[in-house]
Image (cartoon, rainbow, N blue to C red; front, side, top):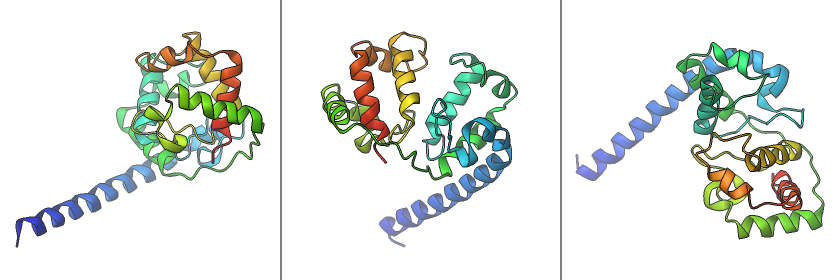
Length: 194
């Protein structure tokens, strides 16, 4: 067998093995996620605009957020009790489950003028440098496209006021430059992305 053929075969085998491992995590996470439905909705599609949509979020982001809630680096009175007893495996399984779900549209209709201003502001402050094009996110950077408008507004305010600091200061340094109008415009734009 030629070296290049061998490398291709190894890559395919690793991809299949990784896919099988993820499927097991998703199945384990499905059962563990039953308690999450009350707040985050069926399959992680929250219908409460104050709570994030978890469906389709990046595994790595979900994993780190759950870990941060458990470790006290991120706090919320509703999240703190259920995460306290989670093991590392539980956190991984939950992240795998929610990452594998399909987000459902919130049906949010942005104000076109504000959304256009939000798009311009996003370009100015280079949001897609971390969140990528379409705000799909990557690794520990969340997918925010199509997230609830109210949730986006709250998170940006929390970063600006330093009530949320579990991001190594990246969002805090960006958010501190934003006015209330900028936050509204950005949330209009990002929530309107599907």
